[in-house]
Amino acid sequence: MPNGRQALGGHGESLAARWYLDRGYELLDRNWRTPDGEIDLVLARGAVLVFCEVKTRASDRYGSPAEAVTALKQRRIRRVAAAYLRQRAAKGRADVLRFDVACVTGRQVEVIEAAF
Image (cartoon, rainbow, N blue to C red; front, side, top):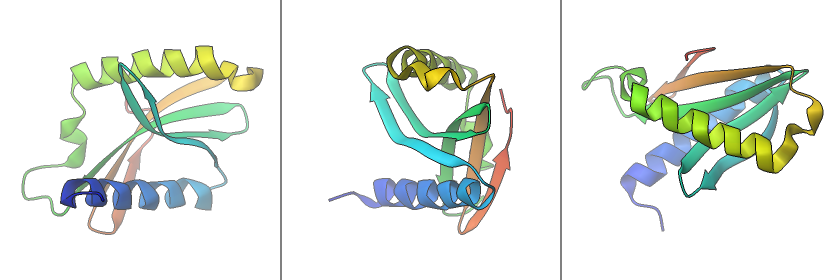
């Protein structure tokens, strides 16, 4: 059973996934893991493959969710994305790779496309 933080994170991922689906993206994977880390959402639309880090907060009291995606976190996500591409082979359909950050505060979703 998920704890409060896990439940909040799962809720945020669901809202972010819905944001992408409503805009015509296909959800390829959710919470894709390697020993090096995890990618919250992997999505595709046309020839664009998106690796999305979702940051969820109950409020903005402690700053923007995007502030939690540090340079170290970005490097880890890139490493995991490279592993994803090797393992999934992306079926040759990705001409463009994009790294987004979805910021979820309450029920509000803001997606920063090509965040890093």
